[in-house]
Amino acid sequence: MLTTVLDELDTALLTLLQEDARLTNKELAARLHVAQSTCLERIRRLTKRGILRGQHVDVDLRKIGRGTQAMVNVQLRPPNRAVIESFEAFVASLPEVLSYFVMSGSDDFLLHVAVADNEQLSAFVLDRLTQRREIVHVRTSVIFSHVRRSVVVPLPAREEA
Image (cartoon, rainbow, N blue to C red):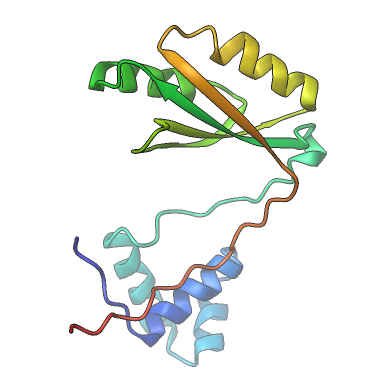
């Protein structure tokens, strides 16, 4: 797997933009003590390399009526490409699903869902998910607290042994 090596300026830019993506180029340059043209060029390069992929808004789920979150593990049978792809298309269309992971191991999918309350969570699992014939097992875990890391920086390079 190809990893991208970032220098201090690129890492600092990533950190600042993750903390507040609304910072202007002028503000970024001032905070980093570099020329605006340098800052703009670095942002363009990070975007062209696919490292910066857009700006995102953080929505308070409780304030939009989706205060109950859960992780739902799903096991499918038979575990073949057609079944996985069909179920993935189904999951992607569900408004309750915030994100999902296609995984190896005993479970094939992990769904992060947000709904109004436990009654709606139960209806989602029992009335929507388990109606699919390919599902052989569902395990639901209610999330008490969700803390998301707002800033992700590159890990230090590993030394070769």
